[in-house]
Image 1 (cartoon, rainbow, N blue to C red):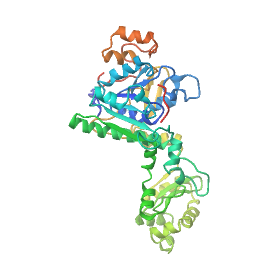
Image 2 (spheres, rainbow, N blue to C red; image 1 turned 90 degrees about the vertical axis):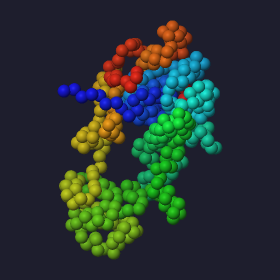
Image 3 (tube, helix red, strand yellow; image 1 turned 120 degrees about the vertical axis):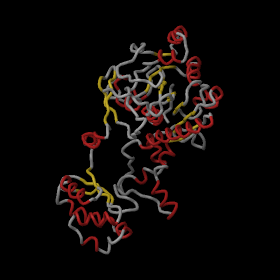
Image 4 (cartoon, rainbow, N blue to C red; image 1 turned 60 degrees about the vertical axis):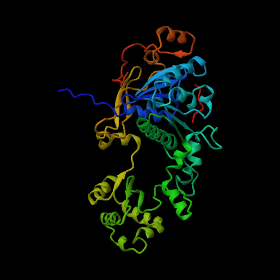
Length: 426
């Protein structure tokens, strides 16, 4: 018995993706995963910079590019050529959303800024993701995740006390800016459905970092306390950190009184419950270093696996410290479909991180791998109403780029479709 293919939440939504590297590309990928028809627009001379972020010279085999650009169709056009910019303006007339992460002002100079496109398509939701936003004294600066982590305060509170500054282990400002960009786009799109009006969505790497300092900012605003590095410990609750065992580490979240008492019972350390230093959370926070020592001395008597069995049976929130290989070997991660595969026309089977949000009625889907450079140029421009003669003229002039795989019909790895620049990185 066959089951009908259910439409995704954003089926029928057309997105122009003028992004590269991570923040903007992640934003548009999130929209693509939910079913939007995302058209990735790249420069012909090499495309997105992440195509070269690989261990080999072949730009079609970049894991970095494939990670950020699945579910998209690819078009290669020279935006610096007025004829190339005109192609994008033509596509923007029928688009619902445009996402870009150029340095503020660059697209305006090419005639592709918000006001210029809004004049032809007032319903367009135009999302700009940059290092510091479209306004303010730093608006013209280029931005990188490292710089945003430093300026947002994240680096000042990450790592161990007394050690040199370290950044969060993942590009959290880049990724969070992409998430906030998608959040802004969807909010603006709901408004458009009600009013018919598009709008300008503006977010930045700096604000994405600041937005994650929730506890730390609350402590500063409320108590005047400036957060400092605490390793894996929590700023407001204890015990809540990774502690050593006989063969590794275990993360324990005994963040309330009930779980604290359960932890002491599981460790056969009931005396700690009555210890005046650890009677309540304020006491445990005041004596956090001593508390960690008491717990570690007991945890080192057994392996991580043994302790996890004991702690889970006692109802104490806890887990092992996984490296990335162990993450994807975890049966729960597999059961949650957090590893999915597509077939790439050059790379063969490619694995992707699964969608982190599950919708029951309009599920997301990983339908296709990242596009080859210019893979869908003919297809996209023909859909936009351009004649074969117009398209061929632009190819001959070097304004467009195609690949040998840019031909009518689906590519290997292409799934059903809903209807089917030189950039300073943000």
